[in-house]
Image 1 (cartoon, rainbow, N blue to C red):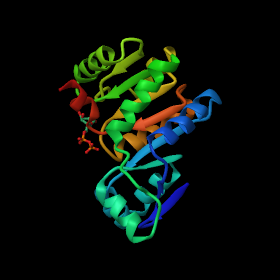
Image 2 (tube, rainbow, N blue to C red):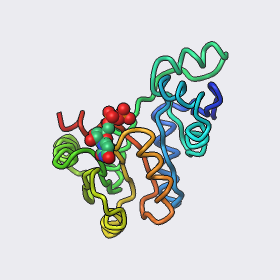
Image 3 (tube, rainbow, N blue to C red):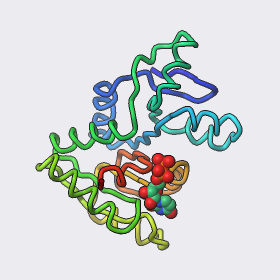
Image 4 (tube, rainbow, N blue to C red):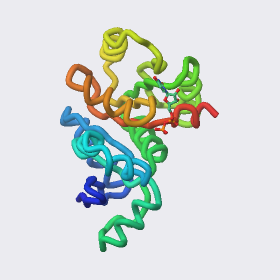
Length: 192
Ligand code: UDP
C-alpha cells in the first residue's frame, strides 16, 4: 500500500513485507527502484516538480525519517514505523546473502566502497559481492559495462540524492540488476 504525503507516494509496508516484495520482483526479473523519503526530500519536492515526479516514479518509497511518520499520523494514515535507507540496505544484503543473490556497490570516494564491501563481507560471510566502483568515474559507459559484466541482481548507488536516483533512472534500462537502491552516504557509514 502507498500513502501520499505532500504529493509524494510513501509505502506503508514494514521491512519484512518490503523484502518479500522486492525479492519476488528479483525472481521475476522485474526492475525496482527504492528511494528513501525523509522530511528534507519532501520539502525539496514541494518546490521542485521534477524531483517530485522522480520520487513518485520509483517502484518503492520508504518512510525514512520520523517526520514522515508524524505526517502520516496527521493524515490518519497507516505508516507505523520508520524504514531507513541504511537499515533497508542491511535487510536487503542479509536476504541476498541468504538467497545467494549478488550485490554491486557503486559510489563514494575511491577506497570507500572497498571498505564497505569488507565490512559487509565480515557481517555476512556467505554474501556474494559481484563488484565495486567508486562514484567518481567519468566514463559512464565503462561503469555500465563493468556492472553488466558481473551480472549482479542488486545494485546499491551511493552518490547522494537526487544524483543517484537520476543516474539509476537514466541507466536502468541498460543495466543487468533488478533491484536498485540509492543509499546516499551509507558506504561511508559502513566503511566507518
Ligand atoms: N558521491 C559520489 N560521486 C559524486 C558525488 C558524491 O560518489 O559525484 C558520494 C560521496 O562520496 C558520498 C555520497 O556520494 O559518499 C554522498 O553522501 P551524502 O551524505 O551527501 O548523501 P545523502 O545521504 O545526503 O543523500
